[in-house]
Length: 630
Image (cartoon, rainbow, N blue to C red; front, top):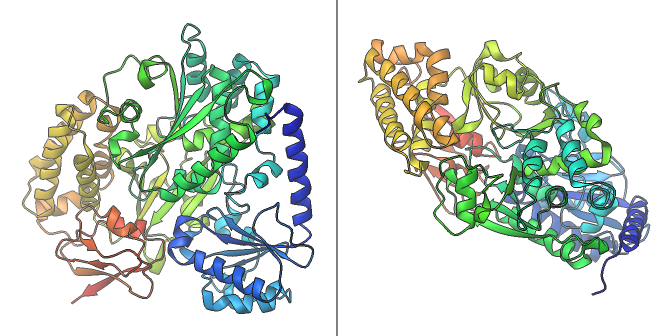
């Protein structure tokens, strides 16, 4: 293989741009190939469209380099569109048509009427409140978003590197490599205001500069945290599946900035599609010479490796994650020293999450001021959120920092279904807190949420309606945290167990007002003495529900009767005609109350079910229904 030169890189870009321009002269049919749509049959739709078009003499190109001519179509497997509950999704350009809930039975009509005839099939359009939408960007779910990280997800083939190059891919890396010093790169990232999107919100530029200054160390590392463990969260999954090259490019720029030559991406093994697409991206970047030794003759070398996590929530914590990569048990350690000083194998390490790295190419290409112009003064840029729970439109959304909860839940999410009242939203997963109706107009940014006793975390948003008992919610998250505790420190190992026992006693209407004081005392102790950030924030769901929904607790400990839990019985069931057998509900159930086989309808054991709502948030198909019993 001949070595890639800088002029060769420019030639690749020119060729890719020309191929992209040629593809605009034919129909581009994009079938969403995110995990949610695949689980509901998207690949069957893709395969049927491909074979049927070919059998009818319609030339089909499956990548930019394929020839299809003006009479042919470009059939793409795109990244996640975000609106998972209306999948499988098929987008047809340049006709600007989005079809929802597409089945194999619809494909012949799509070929005949739309691909060959240019007609719109009204019945396949998305409809909300009696209005049908042809254009994707006119749908309220998309119209009210501001996509930066997710800009190309759903609009390009995630596995076609030529397409990423045609869209300007790796030009930021080239600019950083040849036109900027490490100090200048770190300063640009710092000036942009980019803060870590993994939960803590630490300034990325400051972290990079700390690693860059370790000039005495010949070995440094760049580590990407893709261990997304919060129940109902799938933001990083969407980025890795839909735009993996943006993650690689961000890591490569961090390598140039700090002098690191090795990168590691730590991904949950439960994300096989993300792993596959990252592997393809790494292989293709290595094949053309963008990864490896002496890249473009610059003298800079960089390689990226993938490590699969075994599903331990604690491995989302930095020191536990690096220990896992090293082959040790994933457990946090005492700090200092910090990861920037002694991280992977004791060497200076930049550790950021997927979304943070995916923001970097845009900052280098467009400048710090461009990025700072989005969001708020102290929280620049956008944030992706996984919007789940009791909300009309669930899915993956991206909005500027500072957007209010009301805009996300009601303008994008469409409000609460079945005419129910909004009660709360859990933000930040097990490390976050619950917010109420009075907080709907607060800006969603790092500092504003901190004042409310909550955190953005990785970006999970679980919406709850009036039929939710907040004591049950607290118990669900405490059960999750206690089960996932690594057990290294006593406050987290024993303290969360005592809190869970107390919550279970309260739920059973066997508690007393003294138990509320016990919960508060235990929370203060755990928060002040736990070893790692996960333990220190483990009590936030309990404390926030105690603060904002104390009446729910008093029903249990004073009245010994909760009008929500005990006033009526609800039986949850999974609708067999809507269940695609993806298994997400079972994976997220804290009580192991859901069972079944992949690609077959799952069932719920209502004797075990605690009505926590985790399955509602996890199901992308709206297959779970609550039936009130007399």
